Amino acid sequence: MQRVERSWPPLTALCGNLEQVFYHPVDANAYLTPASSQGFGVHYDTHDVFILQLAGSKHWRLYDAPLRLPLESQPFDQLDVNPGPLSQQIDLHAGDLIYLPRGTFHEALTSTCSSLHVTVAITPHRWADLIADAVAVVARQDERFRESVPLGPLRGQDAGALEDRFEELLRILSERVNLAEVLDAMTDRFIAERRPPLDGQLAQLKELGRLRLRTVVARRAGLLYRLALQQDKVMLVFSRKKITYPSEMEPALRYIAAAGEFEVGSIPNLDVAQRLLLVHRLVREGFLIVVRQPPQDEG
Image (cartoon, rainbow, N blue to C red; front, side, top):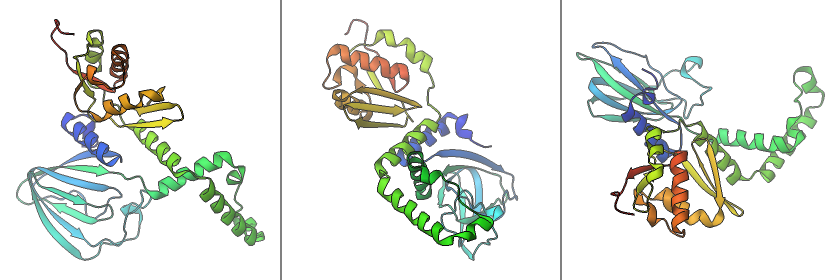
């Protein structure tokens, strides 16, 4: 059962929380295997996996891996590689967890009982991805990166010139790339690609008319975000949205982003109207949720 985190709330929460820790994409598959059976033969994955045994048991065999940290373009079934010697054998029972780094050769079999386990996959952002993003940024600015590359017979006409141009482009890349900007752009794209956790949002909108200073709110669970200063502005990036405020709002936004549950009236550096207005918008946009309202006779 693929991508079960999309339909089972406990796994939705687990994958969302792991993404907040690792800031890499996380998804989950569930595997139900009958007794005395085997799903896949010996193979490796191009992503890191946590395997959580939910019911029954399964016997795992791990092998020495000849390929470390394979790319997604290097899947096992398309490469002429074979596993090394058997290095470890493990029996997983309900409640057990095992971590398999990408590239680890493995296989699993059941014995006299069936097995149900969940594989939580973490697909990393690699240095190769970062460098590709950096090249794309510079290519938009410098037409030399957009020139065609001569191949075939044309390549041999002036091999020396090609070497010189390649070294020139590498030098330009190293001089012009702002690592922080490329990392920010990669982070923003990752946040934008995540499925917004908006369960119960219609009910939250009904609470907007009842906001008070004693109203308790919290950042929505599983929400990825980035808060950054840009000249005289502060930008909050989350769920395919970018909200910009004046820079003097930064302490309040950092408090909101870092706090657990808090009362609207506890937000620092703002007056009453500003606190209510800020929380109103962040609830409406899905960044905050109302946890608890005060009794009607309280402000």
